[in-house]
Length: 195
Length: 251
Image (cartoon, rainbow over the protein chains, first blue to last red):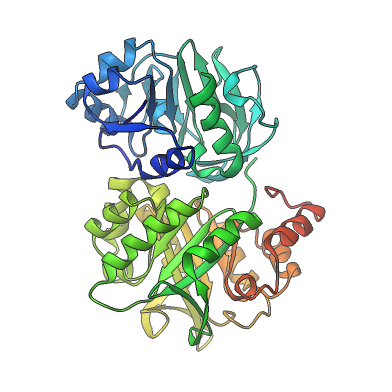
């Protein structure tokens, strides 16, 4: 059973559509006990970081998300919230992976970073099993997490940034696997079957 | 780096896809969800749905369409057509749409752009702009191209950027349906002046038109409708051609 965390930051319908394709059982919840009892956690998120953190606090989910030993996949803002801090609304995040999320340089590139970007696989991870290095994934973000020791895949915009991270049971992807065609479906399948 | 995008546009009326020339003479081009799925499989990077149904039940039918499309495809899609309230935007995003395209409503109430991008993120807000030449001036038209406004095209593009739109969908009504190529000159002016992605729309008739828009106008995406609906051009073939001509695309 997968728990999809629905805490009021962005819609979860697209993730659910993809899970329906994969015929996996899931619950959609903002309640700690329900999420705690799931086998795996998908942690999506769209929108502004400080607003999303506030929503997590209001739903009393912060501690559970910080200490869980279950495989957890943060998607888009969900991945950024795994970092220590975000400059978007100047907020503390969950602190699972090191680093501060910063904005792309608007004087150099168009912001938001929107569309299909090549993802370079930097470290072996089951998350990318069977996915060709350099595959395109769909992104829609204005802030990014800089590359760190836990970066498993990266992309290039005005800078090279973390496209995916992994630390122990925590996985995060900056792109939207649920919107990235076949490659995205493969990645979600890997998370469900192998992580 | 980011790939250039190819975006089929589906004008939808009562769940069917229609396409006209210069915004009139509508013809039926098939079921919306079936066509969406076909484009997904052919390699479209994104889809745009513009609902031109004009009924009181509009919001309900649009939400229903978004649900069905969301079940069928795994690429992002934008939905637009008569959307003017934050509540409607929220309902459509919650149903599974990635972006909302706003046109007439933001001309009437420009603040809707900033309100929507604050609430849902600028990546979800597309400013759709219909431009037509009147007395050598690029004028903004609304209500599906039926009503001329006071606004000047270039200035309005800069304005929606400042207000917080995440993307501009720029349609040349002069070129729309003619298949004589995009309005490359005006597109280039806008691309150089704004800091957000620009989607070229109106006038595509052959592969060279797409190449010209990407190379000369440096747009981020090209949109077309009838060309794809009637199988005049296959999306996979188009993208292969672009790649052979050194345009970065997702294959």
